[in-house]
Length: 450
Image (cartoon, rainbow, N blue to C red; front, side, top):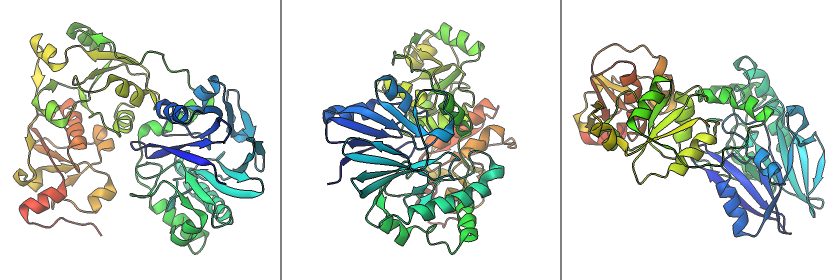
C-alpha cells in the first residue's frame, strides 16, 4: 500500500515540500525550505518525527531547511556530487536508503543542476513514486540556465537524457516534483502538483519532442527571466546555512532610529497594501505588499542579502510572516520595524510621499509602463504601452515625463512606482487592475504579440 504523502505547498515560490508518513511514527521530508513551520505542523498533526530530510539538488530559489531538520535529529540525504560542506549521507546513482519497510533509491538526473538526484520510493520490489525535484515536473522540466547561461544548452541535453530515463519507469509510478506552478524554475501556469509517469508521457510536450535537438530548442525557448538572488543561494546551500535566529519578532524602532539606520545603509520596505502605500509612505521606501510572492520580489529588488531591512506594516499584518518570508531566501539582517507605522512618521514631522491610484478606464495607454513578465505582456497589453519587467526596472533608462505603472492587479505596479520614485521620477500613478480591466472598461482590444 502506498504511503501517505502530505504536500506542503509554498504558493509564492511555486514549490512543494513532500512529507512522507513512513508508517511507524517517522517521516521523510523532501526539499524543505528554511520556513519549517508548515512541515512541523503537518508532522505534529500525524504524530510523526522527522527521521530523514532529503534534498534533490542545491536549491537556487530558497534556503534549504534540511540542515535545520538534521540539527533536530533527522538524517540528511543529498547528492555526494554536491560537495556539501556539512554532515550528510552522500548518495550516488543506485544507492539505496532503507527507510524501514520502504526504500529510497538515488537516481542521477542532471540537467537542472549538475548534481541533481531524483529519489525513487519503493515498497519492496514495487516502485511507488519518484521525487523528481527539478527534473521531470508536471507538464515541463525545470530550467537549465541557472548554473551558467553558457552551459544552458549542455545541461538541457543532460535534462533530455534524465527525462527519458525517468520515462522508462512504469506508467503508474507517481511523480512528485518540487517545482510547480508559479516557480521561476520554469513550471507552466496552472500545473498540478503531482502526476504519474504515464500521464506525463501522454501530455508533457517535452517528452513528446521528436529528438534531443527539438527538446533542447523547446526547453531553452521557454525560459524567461529569474530573480537575481537565485545566483547566490546554491553556494549558500552548499556551504550550509546558519541556524535561523530564534527571535521571530521585529524590533520596534523609533523614527529617529529609522533615520539613523537609513543613513547607515538600511533599506525601508513598505509591506502594506497598494492603497495604504498610495495614501502615504516614506519617500524612497520599497513597496512590496506582504503576500505569497513577497520573498521573490524582496530578493529580486534588494540584491544584497546583507542589507539591513526596516519594515513598515499595518497593525493587522503578521510580523512573523514577514520574518520567515525574508529568512527563507537568506535575508537575516532584519533591523526592525517603524514603531507606530506611518502615523508615527507623520507625527514626527517627517515628509510623507503619496502616489495616486487610477482606475483602468482613466488611463492614457501612451503613458502606461507595463511591468509584467514578458510572456504576460505578449499575451495581451494596452496598445502603445511601454514594457519593462519589474525585475529589470532598477537599471532601466526611462525618459522623464508622466508614468502610469500597470501589472495584473496593482501590487507589482505599486512596487514599480516605488522603484521609479527612488530613481527620481515624480509624476507617477498606479493602475488598480490590469489590461483585461482596461479592455472591458474601454471596449477596445488588447494588443497581442505573435
